[in-house]
Image 1: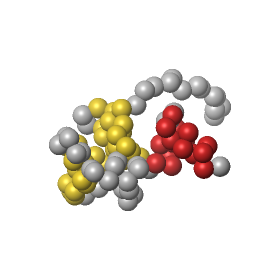
Image 2 (image 1 turned 90 degrees about the vertical axis):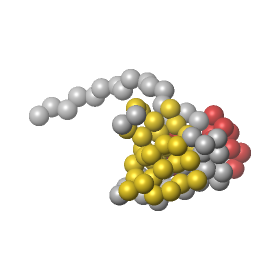
Image 3 (image 1 turned 180 degrees about the vertical axis):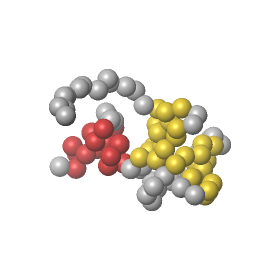
Image 4 (image 1 turned 60 degrees about the horizontal axis):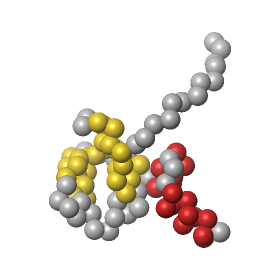
Length: 89
């Protein structure tokens, strides 16, 4: 088997950074419901503890998932976070 390198297409993700104002409640096994301060509700999948500063990523109505802050910042351009991290150095 020969493995080849392929460049991924750049995409834009829809995501919400979890804030202290958001409420998160259980919605089943590996499911949580995010309730924003504006009253929006989104059920999403998670496989690790969800914390303030993490992200909920929306791909489509059937694919909404939790992404840790660390992983999200590694894989996406987040201008505010990049400025904050540089200031800490």
